[in-house]
Length: 527
Image (cartoon, helix red, strand yellow):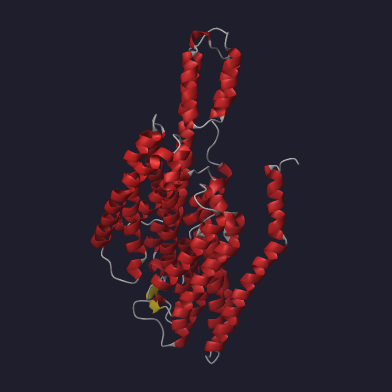
């Protein structure tokens, strides 16, 4: 039987997503929304504007599913792309930890006006505020749905920020917007991916130089990898304390860093002898070293999912909580915040997990394997850089998006690979150009085509072999040009780069425009 070509596989995948499998996914999503409708109608049917609360709950559930389908891919995509775990395992781990983070550490109080974009006092009328929040939720959710359909991971926080801004402008004019905050968000479109990319590339460069390019990479790993694992434990413990536990128990920044340091030292102390014991069974290659990062990648995916659930659930249920507060009591608190009831958190938690399981695989594949090829060492650098960048930026007061940071790390790793290929091409050209004669031309040609797709260790060995062949080895000018062209392969797929960056740029204005339209439609129905 002939092997299935990549193009044929993609056609089969597209057919499957449009057929019965897609129908089942949509049916399960509809069941989830139907349960929300029935439960909310039963609990709040006595209210004067019960249908508004029911509509807000449905839209909040829809928004939560879109967050799961789009945003969670950043947490588990690198681990899946590097084959540290399967897609099914990643979805299960992410769903459990996303839900746990949302319910356990979702926060007792969440600002319904995200990041101070608008001032609730400028709206005044509680009913108008309800229309603003519903319009913001629906506009942001539909934009996320469109971005997911386009295969573009975007910031859910930026989506809801744009939604609140758009419906707020529609309700009270441009003066209601805190434009300095919006300027900071625009700045984050550059700060986030650049910072994440530079740090991920820097970590990978150190790992390549100190470990993977060494003559004995396993022995080098015994020396250096425990430091990286300790740094990861320090970073993720601090990240979890500041981004997850902080919502349950007050944790100061110095305490979070201290807890992280303890975890880092403990991880370093335990991992070094364990790696040394494993070393005899490890292959003296990149694959052997990569196996040391499997468990850290799984742990990182789980911790990132927990922190994401604890924080980004507010993007779905924060505005919903504001609607509940406005319709069931005297209105918002003086500081513009609203307590989140448990049932609202459950909608967010279940919605995120369900959206991930039903519609998340496409974005997980995009993040994990379609932008650039990730092995476990590269994926480790991406995850570590994302957590480090978010922590440092938050302490400096810089606006960053975790989505942009993670994807920036992937782009950074990919462009570093291109840089390595260009340096290798130059080195090969210099070596081959120095040879004269034609006695071994057949041998050189064979090595030429093998070299193009070889890994770094094999390339190094082949260069040594060419040098040993002496002055008789030769390669023609045409062959040198072909080799140089082959080694300049793009390690980052430009179509994904341009599509994702374009989606980032239009996220805020797109969700703002949609939200303003929905606000006007709702206002027209109510007046």
